[in-house]
Image (cartoon, rainbow, N blue to C red; front, side, top):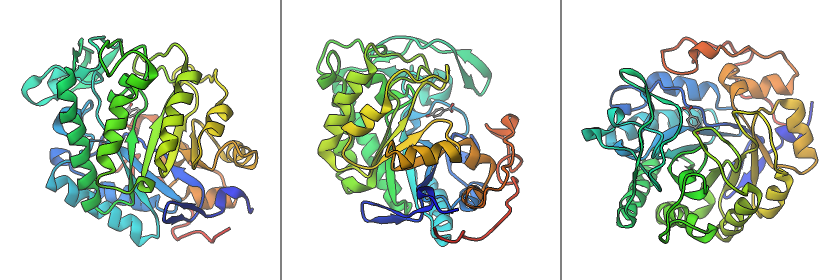
Length: 363
Ligand code: PHB
């Protein structure tokens, strides 16, 4: 029964009860004005035996949104909603970081105030469709940001980081993954700029570095995590040399003493991994969270080989509020219902049964 998965780990000044992280998962169930509400608090509280919860992606401003019903972290009303969640998780002895999000080209004028055109490093239209209030529509060609507009977006991240502090989070995760705005700058398939924000890796990481500098005016570095996806093709993403480019990005992150580096290993679409993540893990000098389809057995192998320090589980936590207890006791898991992943109410959200309601025993 004992395994590393259930051993505590220190992250900055925080002691996590175990190495099981609840991965960020978009559920599209925010309330009015994109504010979290009681139902969301119940959902997170039910899962608070995770060593660390990383919330669903939460837009840093009205212009950062890309989907209906996702929460924001920029208004007072949203802070009130999130405070219920952080209080509920802390009441169970859990810890929770909020993931800060700006969708960039993965959006649509129908979703943005003033029907603005989505922005991106370069005017390259992603393939595929976006869900708008009127149903699915093709992505549009985004507008390439002017260099002098970027400080305004960085300021939105800083504002959101401050709101996250007011809402009582233990830290923030900068979402630099999955084809959203920061990742659009990092990878060369979406960044064709010729100014100081594009070209080589030193320039492509500039926007991320400015965001990190800004949020670290609000949070100590060891309460700021980051998520990267070197080879995820989701959202029309590509890069000419993910291993070398992300080794460089990680070498720059090493300068910062962050809470953790969280990597989605491989490609969500093809379900394959073509780079050796051990190389990236060994390039990083802090806590490494691995994610992508892990179950208990694979997680234990990864931890025992030193391939990771913590494991983020998505769907297993979605469908099993007491996942820690179930893994500890090798109990069967609830099956996830794909039809209720996105949007709706309690069904498929807070009604997955638990076998055990209280905090699992340590170790
Ligand atoms: C999604 O809503 O499909 C989504 C959101 C954030 C991610 C990945 C996927 O990082």
